[in-house]
Length: 78
Image 1 (tube, one colour):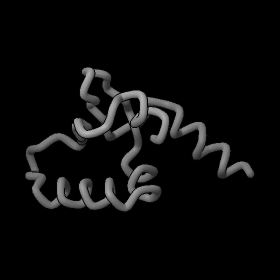
Image 2 (spheres, one colour):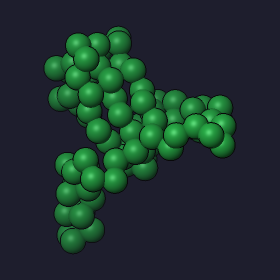
Image 3 (cartoon, helix red, strand yellow):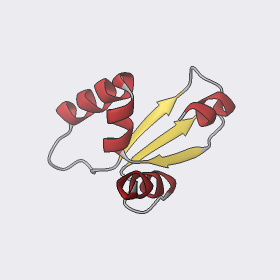
Image 4 (cartoon, helix red, strand yellow):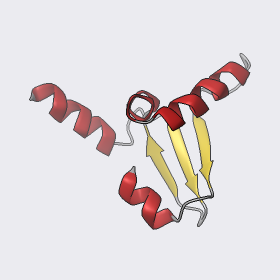
């Protein structure tokens, strides 16, 4: 139970986030790659591809643009 609470707290917090979702209306949502990748195969594949193309000089923070889903729907499912 305690682990589940910690994961929920981490998901709700921007602290230590390493992923940004940029929505079509300009809204930016913070997230955690490890949680997103473990919950969604689609985003895991995107993050894996992004990691492969990363250079040593590129920042650790990732940004994924979400343009094919309305912001309200995306926020409700994420």
